Length: 406
Image (cartoon, rainbow, N blue to C red; front, side, top):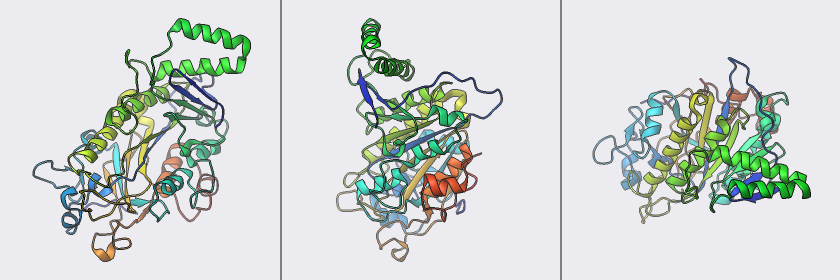
């Protein structure tokens, strides 16, 4: 790999979803010590990596990807990353992070899954297992469980954003959840009365309810009177809203240090749009989420790493409806002050027919499990043995990628 340059008990209260155990008492961080955070964003539906980060310098790219191909000049030009790759124009914030060396791109990457079922592909991506149906736990939860019990990351657990905990974060380690409201908030007086009722009839439920109110207040701070879901996790406004809430929670001194979000809508069989239209708008939503994390985390951004990843890519050749079908390799995005950025990391396979996977898809040359292992090792010090046996069982032959964390 080289840098390439040419459930548990659930309670829904006024739209707030709670999963597992919540915050533990506030713990003061030691002065001068690093306080790492990791955010995993799952892009469900299979992102077209060739239209998100285009290999403009590849002589076969423009003809193969047709109207969806990015260009360095002309209308709706891509944002240059180097002399070979261009970023979709819907992501100017990420482009600036890249220039500031706080963002990087992994290209021609995939899991070990080589079929084209969304359900199975997402299962493999989030479970971290050799194939679908092996387990109901996710690699991110197992990573939290593997962190030594004395470490604050392990004590504080994980954060799930949305109405349901993503598979990647399900398991035995503690998880707290938050979702934007879809109905108006209960006022303080009603909340007080409900708390008083539960305190006498069900003390455990009262504790969970109280924790939920605390979580909701932190996550929804400054959102104003209208806190309804802004269209869901498959819209640009919904992506930003979810990221804003997540950022406030993981920035808190007593908040979780690991978070998972899932953004839907990336299945672009038709009307994809490339540098304009639907895909560009979706990428703009992701870009806005990156911006919300940087803004919301404040000084904590310096110790944060974010990875946005998808179950598989899309075909190298566009179809007859200005879209792309299910494929194989794609891109993953890294961002954060802890990321050693300013790089497109790729062992570029080429786009000639003989270089494509099954003569139709971008060939995978980087195992995304290696990338994730590198982030977990760099942020939390997990060893190759733990990563290869407990977090991603049976993957000792897949080494952690080195040098991802600054």
